[in-house]
Amino acid sequence: MHAQNDILQANILPGGILDGATIAFDLDGTLVDTAPDLVASLNIILREEGLPPLPFDDVRKMVGRGAKALLERGFAAAGAPLDAGNAPALVERFIALYLGRIAQESAPFPGVVETLVGLRAAGARLAVCTNKLTHLSVALLDALDLTRHFDAVVGADDAPAAKPDPRHVLATIAAAGGDPARAVMVGDSINDALSAKAAGVPVLLVSFGYTEAPVETLGGDLLIDAFPDVPQACITLLTSCSPRSLGL
View 1 (cartoon, rainbow, N blue to C red):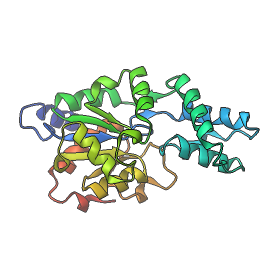
View 2: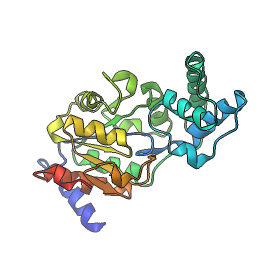
View 3: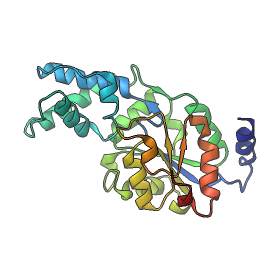
View 4: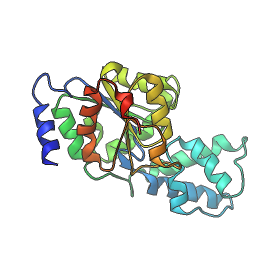
């Protein structure tokens, strides 16, 4: 840890490795543990529709692909596929419920705030690249006092196409004023890995997020177990001659 802190401090100086680099973060399961409020909102909908609530651990793995996808997967798991005709109203109901409790139980993962402060001090541009709707993302970040750390927040509705489409990653980097040639995507899911790879951007995966498949199988360039390891991992990826050679 001391070595990592020394490296980060060294890069606060002009011309440091992180100076001018863009680091794009997924939101749910990467920056913030949002599952408690998402699961609670989904289970309210299921109860209203006469369906049994789902166990927390089952729903946690479904998070990260947007509200409609969560409802579709939740209804299927509850034994009643989501009716296409009712989907728009249920999505609207879900969003209203979720917005009303957006940070009731959600919290940044350990070390997030300190790491973001350090990255910005080192000159990095920071952005959020999420399949969550932008207004929900900003509401969550505002409630947790995290918005101030980011140069851009790009939800699925503000991107040309949502992850795993690479245009989402590229649009986020552009919104932060960055260059894909000096960027890293940090996420927790297959959508993060696929979108970053297709965009030609190295991807750093976290092991504590939301994924149904083992994170080791998702094709990340590096894998970390704690958020404070982000700076050193980004330095490694940005200075590697061939980031893809670091694949898991």
